[in-house]
Structure formats: C-alpha cells, structure tokens
Image (cartoon, helix red, strand yellow):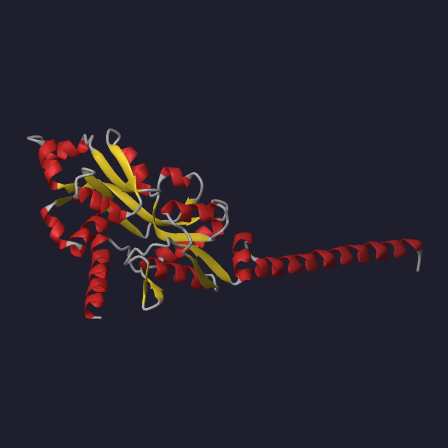
Length: 287
C-alpha cells in the first residue's frame, strides 16, 4: 500500500473513532440526565423522603391529630406531593409559629412547608410560593360593645375602612403583615395564638380580632355563646392565598407542587373548609 493510501486510511479511522466517542458520550450523557434528573429533585429522591414543615399547633381541618394519625387538607396535599415524587412524606412539626415554617424552608431544614400559609410580599422575598390551593377572604371579629360605642353614628363600612382602634392578631403570622397593609392607623396587638386573640376580643382588650373568614366563622361553632359579645364582619376586597412554600432556588420542585395543585378536581373555598370543620366537630361529639 502506498503512503497516500495509508494517509487516507489513517484519516478515515480517525474520523470513525471520533464519531464513535461522540456517540458514546451522547448516550452516556443522556442516560446520566435521565438517571439523575434536575438537582433539586434528585436530592429528594435519593434521600427517599420529602421533609414537610408544618406548625406544631393543630389547625383543623387543615392539620390535626386524630386517633394518633395526622390528618387534614394540608396533610393530604403534602402526601400527594410526596407521592408525585415517588418518595415518602416526613412531617416536621417542630415549628412554633407560621413564620417559623417559612424559615425552615429558607434554611433548608425542610423541603417544603404546607401549613395553611398565606402568601405575603415579605415572605415572598425569601421563599417561592405555589399557586394557591385555597383562597379565603379576610375577616374581623369585633367586640360588639366597642364597635357600637366607637363607630357611633358612623356607617360601619366607613368605620372599618378608616379603622384606628386596637386589632388583635396571631404573632409571627401573615396577619401581622396584613394588619399594617390594610389598617395602617390601627394599633396592632400580637398575641400567642388565635384563642388568645378571641379572648381579648371578648373582654374588650382589643376592639377586634383579625384573621381569615374560616377562622372567624369557626368561633361561632366552637363558642356559640360568643354571638352575644362578638360580631364577625367579612372583608370582601382582601383575600389570603393559601399556598405551599418552596425554596426560591428549586424551580423543578415548585413545578411539581403546582402540578399536583392544578391536578386537583377544584380549588376549595371557605364553605368547603367549614363543611369539613363541622364534620370533624360532629365526629368528636359522637365519640
């Protein structure tokens, strides 16, 4: 074989070997991507479970312990998200406030937080939020005597729009933020929990308690005698988008959470939540 023929054969073999290496690299790369997937998902699937931050205090029908089992709207949603990822749910209920569940997600102590969380601008600066799975209107629980005395002959709607009395909210909750947004002239009093807020409204320590329409309506079921001293008022133009908190740098995890929420038959409203709450009360009465 002549030198020219040898050179041509050498170039042919070189191209063939290079092509083979490219094809092998492509196959290996594709297999690796299929095996590993997006890094924010891979980390969870490798550990085999999804850590869900949830407030330690029961909030039926969203999350509560019944017969030794954690049940509720948020529990079912969290389990559906874990199932969609092919892992087990692991609930962490060490948080003592709603804000603490957000902090657990921000610091990586939890993968997500599902805990009847309202989206706020302040929270959205440190975590990402899913599409809302429930939307609830805001509501006020007024001490009837205080409302009558302080509103005098003023229209109640006008009095609320320019409210400058004392407003009770749960400490380290979204309603601390909402209070300053919607009632800038009010004196905000942060209390340990919703029971403390309701008690303060009953005895007139605060003029009104402030939370979502479900929580305010539920007081009438839990304590029907309070209808004498308390007056609930729903605010139609202020709403809480109840959503799942996800780390801001985990877009694929957020996409899965949104997919699970979007695949639900329909979004629940306050009437649905009240229906579940009434059912839970009835079950307690039968025990």
